[in-house]
Length: 485
Image 1 (cartoon, rainbow, N blue to C red):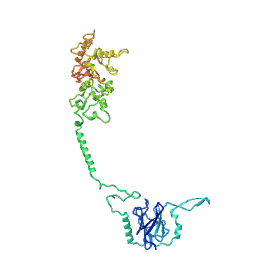
Image 2: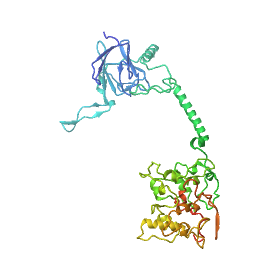
Image 3: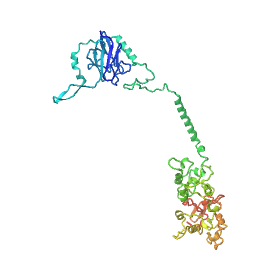
């Protein structure tokens, strides 16, 4: 007598031995809990079931949207099974056979079957032709025995399969771990959707409070920018909203704006040079300073208070670098105390230590004296120095002058044979004596005063050494002869 609900599974698609299963019902699907596991995306999680009822095995379709095919016919409810039947579950073929003890299910994975060889060109040569699934198994249909009729609706069977499906894990109680949908089909069995119900809220609060703290600090820094990043306010000349100096030495007023000097698009040196480019003044520096990397901010300081005067303070910065105590190097070169520690007359041991003016600065002086090809450097410097003073500078109180009121050789030298080189060291201070440059009225021209100190308690190197050669205000108008352009 046939033993009920005994199944023998022969997997031809897998390298495994036949398996015998004794169960009250065979569940077919993709879940691991199914007795007949068919792992393929086209197979439902629990797609069908086989159960013996009154001595006959019946196939039950559990997924109407993805029905199982019995002999290429979709099963809508349940159908009785007979020996030789073929079930199609996705790409799997299940061939059924009855024995005295069990229902034998032979599982194979097939997309098409090879039909008989059909001769093409000769009786010995043929080709294999793949036939569609609908054309297969016609020979088997003729040999089958009449099958039993489908079972009528039975609530007990519905309850049975619902219980089996729940046991297999198909019907899971909804939980926060499935906030949107069930797990997707296919091999990805652990498709968990992240939620925040199990997350610690502490990290998010740290981020929020951190952002609030950074915002408060930024607001405080914005209001306290001046005191935080600058030692003092800018000078009065840079805080003006309009240019009141004639002739102007800047293209536009500073207006107490940080962006007048500081920006993200260029250096402060370039901003200074671009602003201080006017008809009366062009921000140029000497080639030695340029080669040494000395720029505007090296001499002109700012943020020292409203009454601070950057131009006047720069006159005392020369001796800060140019002294023997300065151990710093500038592009590999050191600087020394100029003129052997003396001021004024640049002759030491009978040799000129003054470097003179370069060709471009010399042309700006409009002096009709040129260097001869055979002249050595020492003689050319002497000619430059005397040409800048004799017949260009008016005599002042305490210095001799010629009939036109201009300086002459005897204004500084008491004797010429031999040449007196001691007295000029004291006479230089008569003009460069710390007086304030006043305004003067010359024929056809009004030159207002610049309030520039010509020499103070510190060495005023700039009164002799011209840094900004294109500064038309450099030469004191009150000392210039009326014949000088």
